[in-house]
Length: 412
Ligand code: NAD
Image (tube, rainbow, N blue to C red; front, side, top):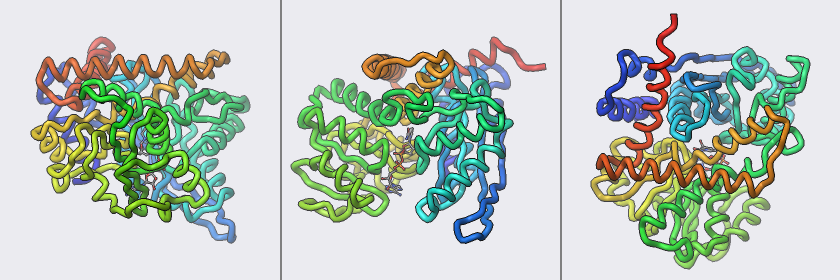
């Protein structure tokens, strides 16, 4: 099922059970603004290529919109719209003063030079400049974009405005108003969610058997933090496939191997597995941290993990959710599990607006406190109403926006 269709299906499932004020259901079904731009850039060989870029602002009831920018060959308007909607629920669930947005450019970053990526980023920023800003819409990194991409975006915005504007994007390098802890924020949040899940399963982090799909920013950070606590990361994968060792993989060595080889393949003393094998491996916690639509009705029946902590956005389809729920496999939904990144982005934005920067232990402490508090709010709603944690998280997020829309009223 296409991603947007699956997100809207989930939305209908949730709002069918809510008593939303008149019109709110329909308003929240549609993005507030969708921008499609053409990005012509000169390639290193002198040819001109034209890329398609998107920025979708789904909702801005609670504050400026917030969401990442993704560079990937599969980026399209529907995907970006679905991800923007998820950002609205995520920010509302985490009680941040933000609406939801997402952006992306359809391109193959692996085939582009650094200079080509810089030209792409700068031209894209200038094409969407009227839609972004520290009080309007604040982009951040996502798949295949990073601190450098955000530095180029911030610089382009600042050059065009004539003054340096730190708060226009988050996920920036420290020297440009970035926050300590931002780069590992999402993975650290995922790690806290595994920790909270282990508590309710009556298990310790030490010895917990974990499988992780995707070994990028999110997957590798969660893997490292779990490994440091003595968890056994028994399987990991990237887009080329996976590796397995029932005794656990040394994650520090693996990170070094990936830094040197740009892939996990050829890592010694492991069995080679496919991405599909990884999802159904016998483990305590499964962390999908790659792309959407990985756990489907075809493999959900074979998942052996006790808990799935969704590092990626939308890795589980609604059909798979139903199967997992019947089988009592707990799913910590993406809008909660991977919210660490947007929470630290919020900290970064607050620090940029105040021109005052916090210490790393303060940031980690605040992140842990927020993640654990919302985890327990979602858990207790799911237990009270006998619904799964995704339904509970979406209900809390949607209800918060609905309440704000009701009080604000409908303009004009
Ligand atoms: P990344 O680009 O750093 O890493 C992605 C990883 O997934 C890589 O190891 C890649 O090889 C692998 N991968 C790609 N396609 C795959 C496939 N079809 N099967 C298996 N593996 C595949 O990206 P990231 O920043 O770690 O983001 C991962 C996921 O987490 C995405 O869904 C993203 O939207 C979500 N997310 C990221 C952040 C963040 O702060 N980076 C925040 C919230 C959510």
